[in-house]
Amino acid sequence: MTGRMHKGWHGGGRGQGRGPRGGWQQADLPDTGDAAAWLRGRLPDDWFVAAPEVTIDREEIVIVGELPAVQGDFPDTDAGRAEKAAAAAGRISRFREETRDERIDIARQAEHRYQRKVAWGARIGDVEELFTTASVPVMTRLRQPERMVLDTLVDSGVARSRSDALAWAVRLVGRNADTWLADLREAMAKVDELRTRGPE
Image (cartoon, rainbow, N blue to C red; front, side, top):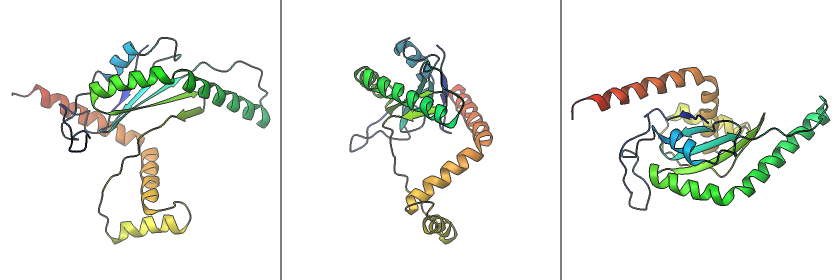
C-alpha cells in the first residue's frame, strides 16, 4: 500500500527534545518525511483496503484507514441508508476492539521514533470515526473586535465558550480555504527542502 501524508505548515520539524514535564520541544522535533513509508511497512497488510491517510502536525500523527465495505442489500431509501451507516459503524467498532493491542504497540513505536502522539481512525464510505485524538491548548491574545466575534458565536448558541468558538472558526476557515492552505503547505515544504540543502 502507498501512503498519503499531510503535514503542518512547518514541514515536519527536525531533531527532538524533551520539555520540563516530559513534553516534546516544538522547535526541535524529528523529521516526519518518512512517516508514511514507515507506517506502510509497519501496518498489517490486511487492516485496510488501501493506504491509510497520515496527517501530521507538531503534536500528533493521525492515521485513518479505509475498511472493507459492508456487504448486504441496503435499499436506496432513508431507512436503507441508515441501516448501511449503522452496519458501517458496527464494523468500525469491531475493528477498533480487535486491533486495540496491536495499535497501541505500533503507536508506542511511532511515538518513540517521531516524538509525537499517535491517534487512529477508520472509515467505510461516508462513515468515519476518529479514535481518541489529542486536544491541544493554543494560547493566543485577541483584541476586542476578535473577542466580539467569539462572543457572538457563544451568545447565538453556535459555540459553548470562547475556546469552542475559536475552534469552530478554525474549522470553518479550514473547510473554505483547503486549496490555499494546501498551496501554502507545499510552499513551506519547498522552503524546508531548500534550507536542508544549504551549507552547514
